[in-house]
Image 1: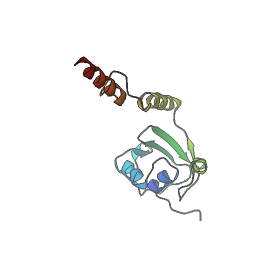
Image 2: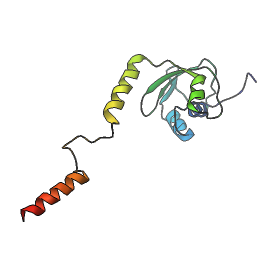
Image 3: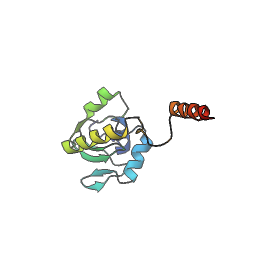
Image 4: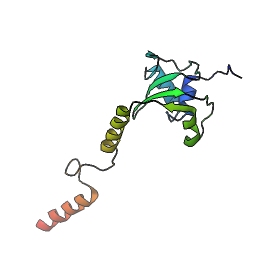
Length: 129
């Protein structure tokens, strides 16, 4: 059982770095996954102790394989199969980006009026006539 094979794209999907296997495969094909500074192909076999540099949509990861995971498990189990070696400055960068981009609120006085502002405007314009 020591020589079991596991594809890189399947491993990245199963440890939950990517939402779908297709996204993991595309990332490998587009050079966003590196092994020893070289782009890694999606069909590359994963071995214990391998270190990968992975760029996902939100951030950059540096992970070390500590266990082979063939199926997708819940997050609490999945994180036991790799060690996150990402440099602290990358984590800080990700936090700053998350705070500024994904607040869900639109900046005031920029863009289209909200429904409430639109109603207030309509009431104001109707009142002038």
